[in-house]
Amino acid sequence: MSNEEPTGCVLTKTGRYLYVVGNTKPVAEEALSTSVLSENLAGSDLFISKVDTSNNTVLWTVRDGTKLDDTASAVVLDESETNLFVGGTTFGDFKNGTSKGISDIYLAKYSLNNDSSPRRNWTLPRVFGTSGSDGVSALKVEGDLVYGVGHSGGSLFGGSGGEFDVVLFAVDAKTGSLKKKVQVGTGATERGVKLAIGTLSIVAASHVERRVNKKPMTNIQLHKFSKDLEPIGDVLLRAFAAETAADVFVHPRVPSAVFVVGTSKIDDSKREDAMFRRVDIDTRDVKIIGSKIIEPEHVEHPQFVTRHGGAKASNDYARAAAVHRSGRVLVAGFTTGSFGQSAGGSVMEPFVVSMDARNGSMEGVFQDGGVGKDWRDVRTAAMHEDKLFWAGQAMDYSKNTFYAYVGKFDVPKNWTMGIDFSRKATPNKPRSSAPTTASIDMKTIISVASGLGGCLLLFIVFLICMRCCKKYNSG
Image 1 (tube, rainbow, N blue to C red):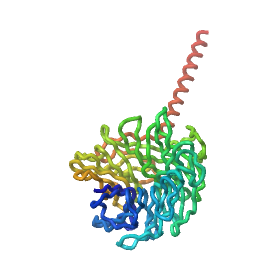
Image 2: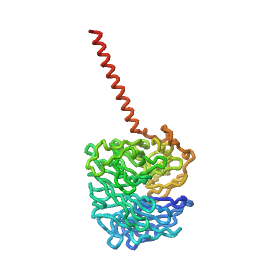
Image 3: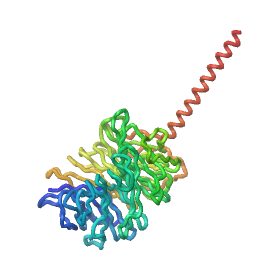
Image 4: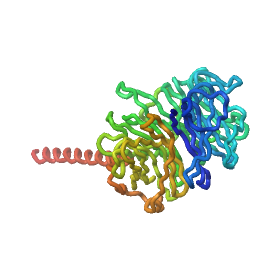
C-alpha cells in the first residue's frame, strides 16, 4: 500500500502538460510505480508526475529524497520550460554533509527532456538550514532568479525574533547560488507560507500565532519587500477568528492590491468557511518589522473580506486561485457539504467558484459531486485559458489508502464575460442554490459608523437648542 499527497502543480504555456509534485510514503510491493532518482530512498519521499491533459494520461512519475522523510511543497517551471524547480523540507542528508539540523530547506532542479523522465540538473539539491527546524513553502520564478519563502527556527539569514521567523531568499536559476536573502520576525511565531511577485515589490504571506482573549489563534500577516528583498512593511490581517492563507497573488488589473484566499473559522464556531480577501498594499507604508508587539493602529483594514460557506455545519476550504482572462478570479477548494450544486451524499467534494475581484462577491459555483462515499479534496490548481486543472487527494476505501488525482473544469461561457474595473461592482447572487454569507466591506462599515456618529451629534445639538429655548420662554 502507499499514500500520495499532491502539494503543487504547474502548467506549461500551451496548457498541454501539467507537472504535479507531492509526497509519497510507499510500502513494499504496492509502492507508487516510479523511476528513482536517488539510491537512498526511505520513509516519505517527494514525487514528480507529468500529465498529458489532452488525454488524461500520466506520462511518467519519479521519486527523489533521502533515507529519512522528505516533503515537497512547491514547484515552478523556468521561462524556457526545460527546467523544473522543486522545493520543500528534508529531515535527511542528500550526501556530502548537506544536513544542517532537525529539518532543512532544499531546492532541487530537474532537466526536462520531452516525454522521458527528468534528471537532476544540479548533482545535489541546494540545502539551507540551521541547527533548528527550517523549511520552504512556496516558490516563484522571475527572470534568472528562483524565489522561495518559508520559515526558520534559528538564525538562517539574520537574527531570530521568535520561535520561528519568515525567511525569503533568491537563488540563481542556472547555478543555484544564493543571491538574496532576508529573515524577518516579531516576538511571535511566524511561518512564511505563500509568495506573490508584483511589478515593483514582493509580498510574502505568513501565519502568525497570537493570543486573543487568552486563546491561541492563527492569523495571516503580509510582508512587503522591494525586489532587492529590503523590508518595506508588515500588514497584519487581524481577525477574531483563526484564518490561514492557501494562496496569495497579484491581480494584473489591480497591481496595487494583494488577494488572499484561504480558510476562516469565524466566531469560535465549529464550521470553517472559504475566505477571500483583497488588501491594498500601496495605501500604507507600515514599518513595524522587528517590533515585539503588533498594535491595533498597525493593522491594515482590508478593502474587502468575504466568507462563503455551505449549509448548516459544513466545512468549506479554499485552496487555490487563478485569474481568468476575463478578470474574474476562480477559486478551487473542497467542501464537506453542499457548497454549490446538490451533493450526491459524498463525504468530501471539490468546488470551483467565480469571484468578482472588485468586491469579493461570488458570481458562480460549481461542485463536482460524486456518488456514495466519495472522498476528494483539492490541494493546488493551475489554469490555461478556459480550463482549470486541480490536483488533490482521494481515498481508496477498499484499501484504506490515499492517492493523488487530477481534476479538470471547463469554464462556462457566462463566467468568461469581461469585467470593467473602472466601474464599481454591485454584489450579485451566485448562480447556484449555494448559501453564502454577506460581504464585509471594511470601508463601508467605517463610513456607516461615521454617518451614524454625525446623526447622533446633530440630535444632541437639537436637544440642547430645545432646552435653551424652553429656558428662554420660561424666563
